[in-house]
Image (tube, rainbow, N blue to C red; front, side, top):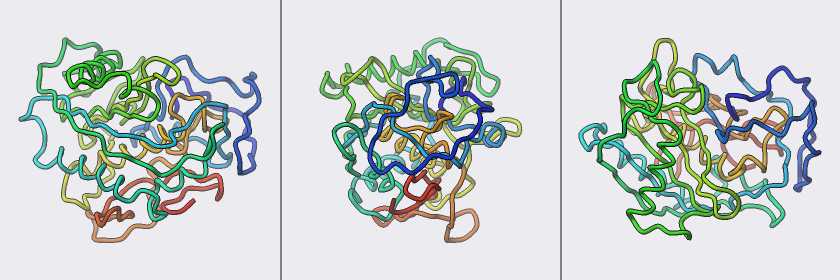
Length: 322
């Protein structure tokens, strides 16, 4: 969902498919401007998904802000070298490479984004694999407190990590800006909180930004998805690549597609504040393969199990095309 303050219980209105960007009406009591928090695309844990599921009736509308016409992706793995599952980092970086290798193809969920646009025109399926960074330094003192883990990073601390990596590796102003996206990964046993929401008890991932306008730094928080808490889970349950990273990649796809179409909460979302990934969260469509290793996407020859994305053209969730 869009934020902890997403408005529920609004009267639903069926929206027509948007063929070209027409800015939505100004905010009103029936259509609020959105929450003060900058937490977007908050993927609810399985145990709460039904309680906060956005409407699948109304289409997305454009709210006047920019989309990512092309995007360069960076991965940041924050944690001791010994804390990562074998092959976890390699599997995630391979995914970004695969998504970039299939640029422009209609055969995966990323192509559905190309129906959306801003004042500069339609965006393109154009992903560039930037670089990967590992930060093995000790975590700062807990910036928050959650029920699921003993280490808890606040959103402010995650932002600080992104900025630290940019400084350490000489990524200046050109690496900020609205065509670059930093994914911050943390290992098992590390949680996080944003306002009153926390990983594993409320959310599985989210995307946000630092600063404003064309110079903003875009990032996504990607906790380890296979860590369950009580009845809640962030695990998709399928391992087409025999890796725990498979579960995290489903959430990566959710946040990546949402950042492309609504990078700063001013572009494409529906009247409840739900973005294209929110409206199809935990909806995987038709899959192939054996139980436990099922897949519904083949990207650059590799199988993945990813949620569907919302299509205004079809007024529903899709895995391929628009």
